[in-house]
Image (cartoon, rainbow, N blue to C red; front, top):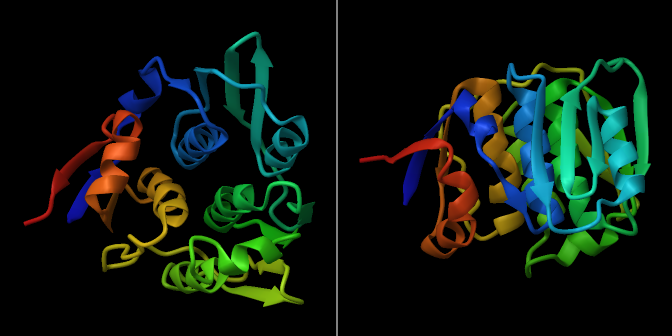
Length: 208
């Protein structure tokens, strides 16, 4: 099924309580791509401090107080190269890479060999193809290093995202709706049911 999503500023007014890191990073992506500069949520897990520091480098400040997490968008230098080792949490490299691509940040992401056969597919190659369709150039080197280049400005694509085989990619491309205003994506029923409590807070409709 193809869904048409629309940016909804009221998304950030919801009292979210996240139970996974990827939900929190999805929220951080949405905030970074929107015109909203601050938001809060609750988390039922302890935040990963080294990972939080990496997102701070890319312009998203994340701090926690008990189970309340505060997020704010900060300035960053686009011309500087960000180098991050994701060997301890390679899946988190995907939302971080999307964050860098959308915001025009040069990045060198390392420790990604586990993603070459993730979800029974070459996730890195699929990810690179999707970013290229948004006009973003990348390189994958030494079977573990992904380079994101800011040589070209990200552009909205005319065709829907069609990556239903990868929940990880589907999930972390959706925040781009706050960059472009609208975004079409093919989602299967199991994905929509799994993330419905979160993505239902976005404005969406089935495309006919």
